[in-house]
Amino acid sequence: MLRVTVLVSGGGTNLQAILDAIDRKEIQDVRIGAVISNNPGAYALERARLHDIPALCISPRAYESREAFHQALLQALRDSQADLVVLAGCLVVIPECIIREYKGRMINIHPSLIPSFCGTGFYGLKVHEEALKRGVKVTGATVHFVDEGTDTGPILLQKAVEVREGDTPEILQRRVMEEAEWILLPKAIDMIARRYRE
Image (cartoon, rainbow, N blue to C red; front, side):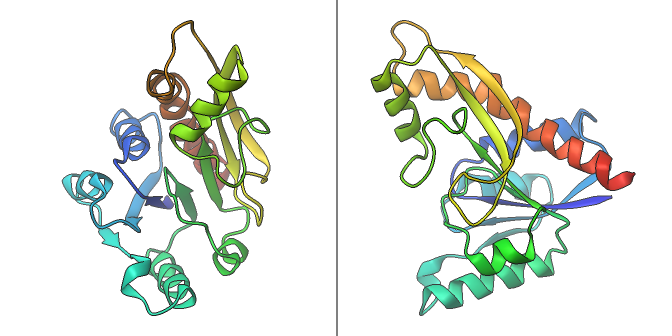
């Protein structure tokens, strides 16, 4: 059984996609041990509670230093006994101490076809605003392993999504979530769980 801990910052739509895929048996031999957010108001925490999953808020504001926050987050991950850490809309920059400990066992979903529209400053709607500004005809999403860079780790899965005439950043964001993110992230977790079983 692959134990997964999910890190989130907002509404948790990617978390919901994972939960739904587990319920539909599209992801097998996986148990979500904890959902952790840096944001006390994240609806993702409520989604976790509705599924009887431990939901923790570890906010940088609650600690006297960034280092103390990082240590608290690392300890929470250790306590959750995570085999795999999934960044599902997590806006915290993951520190090197956590990246080192979970090397090859931490994945992220990014709302573009890396290497396009990624790296520092590219998150949320900003990604889609830039894609539309540039005039691309195709965008998408990428699941990649997390390394010390921003969106630079090895790519696991990608899926393309068409950009349509009249798209706004909000409309494009929704299409990328529905047609790529919510499909790719559960698929990536199931792939890793299969490897874990072998």
